[in-house]
Image (tube, rainbow, N blue to C red):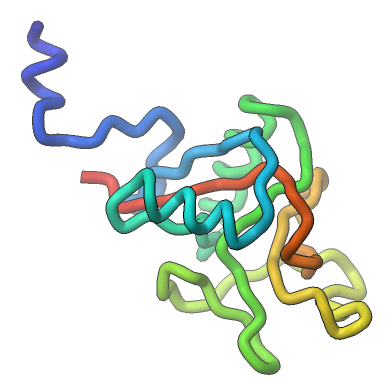
Length: 138
């Protein structure tokens, strides 16, 4: 009973909390736009997760490994003209690209994924894969 009353009016984070945000990993493959829509629909203030620091990156890789093994995973980075942005409005101040990336192959790689080795990669947005949502932890 004590547990329930403490959580009343709060959202419970089943993933991890870093820098005031809850990050949750979802194994069910969705394309980039559908994954972002899912995050917005399921969680107030939700978006695909932004990786803004090395600490967030390390914690997120641990969460992915614990939840589903190292797999290609959508995060909230998106190409806007010649730069990248985070969909949640966070400042793009940290990145860890795979060597040679981002390469914008055939001019159609506009979305950011994390590979199994933890490196960022630009990729085609229509591919369905696992994803991470983040939202403000209350």
